[in-house]
Amino acid sequence: MPKSIRRCPLCNGCHSKLSFPFVISFEGEQYYYYRCSVCGTVFINPLPSDAAFSHMYANSNYHEVFYQDPSTCAYDGSAEILSRFAQSGALVLDFGCGTGTFLDSLRRYGFRGVGVEFSCEVASEASRRSGCHVYQVHEFFYHSQPPKFDIIYLGDVLEHLRDPEETLAKLLTHLKRGGLLMVEGPLENNHSPVYWAAFIFGSVKRFLLPKFIGPGVPTHLFRTSAKAQKAFFRRVCPRPQFLLWDVYETGWPYSDRTLVKRGISFLSKVIGGRGIGDITFGNRFRAIISINKY
Ligand SMILES: [Zn+2]
Image (cartoon, rainbow, N blue to C red; front, side, top):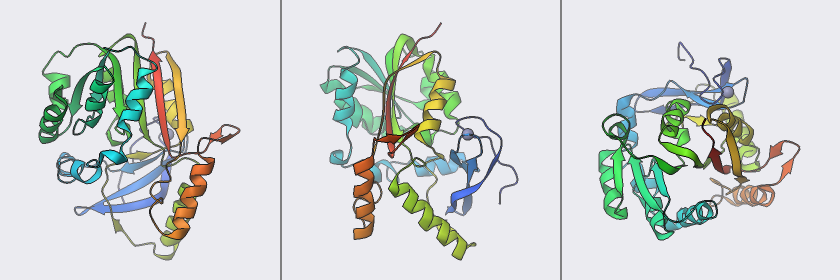
């Protein structure tokens, strides 16, 4: 067990306890999951080292595994939604652009795109594919003077950041006054039959095999709910105005599994996006936020 537990990356709360999915092992290191007692976000502890990060995000380990089938990625859909809120020709920063698929979609919808990517190899691939300029992360923040952007986009990126608050604050200094922040990502700790089933299965397994540590890759550094994610944006963004806040369900990762899991996935999709009180069912969110800096 780790000696010290870091603060919650979303609300900065300092009290937490071990929670589902408990612990995984990656390259000989064990990563534990703690649940924040303030906002309910579950976060990984300790953070992966620089070496682990480099290995996880090498093209052959990540992008070639998860993002090579364009049919599984709703990039054009995201660009179309953005086009309802922004004018053609707007300059868009795609932070964490991967191999450049969304940059390609942006171009088709009349936007001008610029990318930032962690891996040098992946940044080169993104630039080649999209024809857009793509910075490496350290180059963007420390070695260049990038332009101010009309829109900053983060698609499935926040949960990969060691310090999402710090990175978002730095990124927003590159946004024009009155610019838009568009963010999409998973809600792996939100109300959904898929999540409830996974939580129950995982908790029973933990009870029966308390010392079992399965393999895993610590790419997602936190798992949160719609409520905690929205509260994070309200806390970190200057005078945020939500032009779009959409919670929806994909049934992942149960949609192509056994009959029982497919049934749970179907039920999740049926109730996804609906709500009771301040709860909205779903496993993903999409936000477009107008940032009104002083
Ligand atoms: Zn928290």
